Image (cartoon, rainbow, N blue to C red; front, side, top):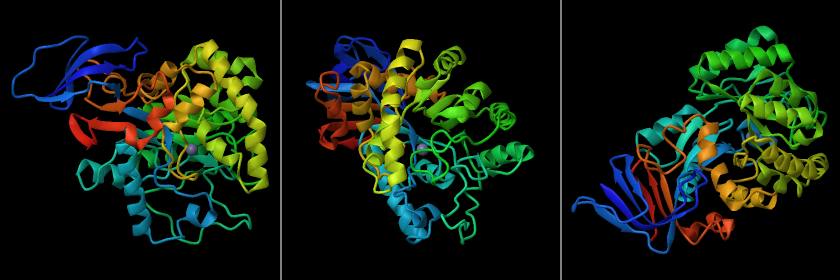
Length: 407
Ligand SMILES: [Zn+2]
């Protein structure tokens, strides 16, 4: 049994912080949360949090933990030995947990072996929610074609099945193949993006409505939520109409006022992933830079309108290709885009847990939930940027176990 005392508690629900709170952890769950001094057994391990802030373990709902660069050789997995890359990924998983992120939803590229390695204790890392490979039609972002038109020269990895759909009839088998390979969630794409190949940009669509409806229906039959990469244009409309569970990137949601109204009505979450576009705005590739600059104002306007429309905005970094900067950098971006620090924290805690469908166990500090907690030096409500500095993350607890202790 562990007891956190004297905590300044931000519980992830959006409630005002409690001062002098006590949190009792029994096994892997939170047993008691009280805004005052509480009784606990004499044998309990007492952790004095005076001067520190306690938050729910943070959640990043859009990350690519096994990606480390954008260049083609890396995308194809031929730039270094597989073992080196896997160990590089394992290092990033550990660093991410130590940064206070106890749950990561991987939006493509991380295979189920990593989840198993964490479960077996071979490596340390966050709880993983995996999508395995990105599903798109021919020419979409899940189709790893080179500028010369060539396909990758090495045989596919059976742990990362191809997500390329050729016809309507392929949609359901591809979804089932992802689930067979260990997908907890289905990731698809209905538009290009900033970094996708020339000719397939943010408003170029991929998938028709029939295909997307089949994809969403099959995923839901298998109890999987659908993450949809969609930036603008017809593809964004198709994704919302088909009823995906989150629109990720969503840069041009402001261009048609029906989009956000429909998302609010259907309970679709919005995951803007602002941090990645800061990187793309400095891209040496002209088409990437131009797209990222063009979308920025729309992206910020989309977030402001989403909050007004009652659409929940959730934090995802799209980290991977642009390296693995501190995930909490996204919260900084969200505050600069117009969210309050409390909303930004909800975007990475309570709302994020709802977005990934794990709010019964994760996302808030409440009795009965899993004891995933982060203890921070400083006050993130006064300065959200304290969360992105590793030195400020004093203690990380995942499932009642101490994952990092730098007090
Ligand atoms: Zn992504």
